[in-house]
Picture: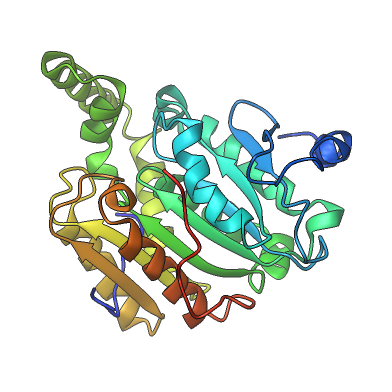
Length: 303
């Protein structure tokens, strides 16, 4: 499974620089949270904190890995939390077909890493916030980082923490995709069965990559501090699988924090428990000493 926590606090192949340069001047009449994002491609969109008090090289870059078929307005609520702190936000997403084709997902994470290696971003501290299958994408990102010594050298000290909301193990992918693409029960059953059969028939060219991604995330060889937000009521990102991941990280001496709710559904924890959710995010940022996060966790996410 991907991210889930422990220590329980209980409770592209082309340069992206031109995109920022061409759009930088058009936003200054509104706050960065109100400006339209820069669409890099169908998988990546960038929200630049141009009204930040921090210099570009020193302000954080937040990598938000979306859940499947998430609407931009929903993901931007989370991005706003970081933009209001003066931090840049890169939104990352894949569609169901890309999720089923690991080589496609791997190209997307390659684009993410290319973005982080732009000359203007080489020193930006990084925080990761992943949702559902975003955990798989982050695992693929880690696989690529660990296969390249230059990426390891640059990123091992830039990645300060990872927050995982409702992470899904590879076993949960068929059910999770079926729930994301339709609300019709009969169609959900058909989609789930079709994907399960596909993964079984192609296990040598698909499943091994899901397993590798999950294992790489759980190993957490860079000992990245982690926060897991999940629920006992989540039938997609199952809490017992997440708890096992948390315990595995804790045994390695990794700083892990978590919050498990009783009633919130998959990726609905902020919607159901907004105050606690923001408090947990702020608590984690304070614990990992991520810049000057204020003591009060009341920077609001609207909606």
